[in-house]
Image 1 (cartoon, each protein chain N blue to C red):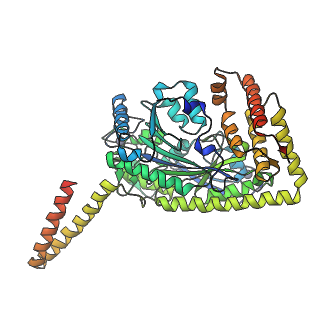
Image 2 (image 1 turned 45 degrees about the horizontal axis):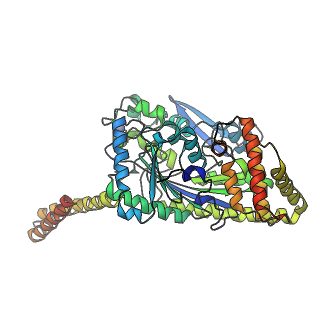
Image 3 (image 1 turned 30 degrees about the vertical axis):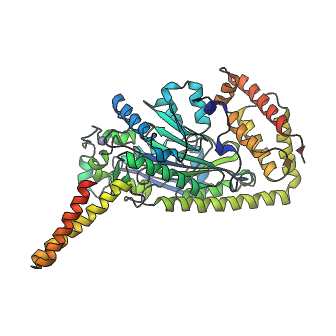
Length: 359
Length: 172
Ligand SMILES: [Zn+2]
Ligand SMILES: [Zn+2]
């Protein structure tokens, strides 16, 4: 079977720019952390022990019931080169930790890349479901089903009072991390964002930038996720996140309308300038590209720009990252070379999709 | 309260950290928290969540003298991780660590999650066991009560129920 498609195609299902509320919500993700008795967690497991864990998990893949959900392909990390690992990170299919430090690590991918299961990351098993648009409840249903399948074959580390036992104390209990990636250009432009982010952190949710822990919120993209995993049920966690995100969506929509009503010429100008720069620039760094792509996306959502599909925007957000650019070029590139390639790639994409341009 | 960093904006984040019995309080506004990258996990250049955790783990509840005396001596018998290592790494070594460090975890979980007890999903297989176990316990209690009261007829019926349930557990 060919593995190449996981690296060559930028477009995972989650990037197609469709799904409920896709004018604002890019994707919805559930991650479930599980460990298997009696093995020590990956940090302390011997080579032999982590190998056994990997074997046990790959046996479950033979399960006929599991195959009714999707066909799965297992990729051991040891079989991938650095660039391939980076591409999987940029597509959000594996974590940087799995790419960098895992022993006997592997990732199991469903055909449409909505499901990715990491083996021997911080925990033995991390089941991730990533769907486009605002579908956090659907993502939970899917992850929950897969968890049930694994549970019939594996002896999970579980304690009556502490719940699912995880390597990090921040995951114990449900072991669940639910997160929604959301594009909030109007709340940033109208300077309401800080007030809203601070309110979010006060109801037990965390906010971070697009590329995970420690990164900036590039291109007005924010990831909102639950912080509490112990003492709340999965449904409570998901309903809480759902409710908060629902409110943020309404605020962003209101802010967009306000912008269009009060400062229409300014917004059209900003969007059009960004569109022009992306269409003609010869050199562009990733920070500027993300910001300009965010403007164009806002322009599409407000009807200022027509004939460009949000799919292209989502795809470009991933494809203009360093690993992808190098994969695309087929060679290692210096930062300066990447800025040239990035500009080229964006011009090419825009030319292909936009016969119409600015309305 | 005014932010202790900039002295201008109102402080919205309040932190108490106790290291080696010494209490430090932080009152800081959202902007300074972001700039310093300290309080919000995931912001650039932040203390990682694990740094933050090991800060929390160092704290010694002043009300409990026994805990404060030998907090670093405990060791997990299954994986060998010591409590001192755990508080440095911010990670458990295996599922048994939860048992071996049990008497110190409640304050940690309270601070991280605001709670100490799981109320969510239970795995079907072992979860079924948990249900049987709880049922068995209550049947046995009732059995003792009936015997005490010399209600032997009911006791006999309870004994049968217990045997039935124990057979189920053994088969599962
Ligand atoms: Zn301040
Ligand atoms: Zn242990």
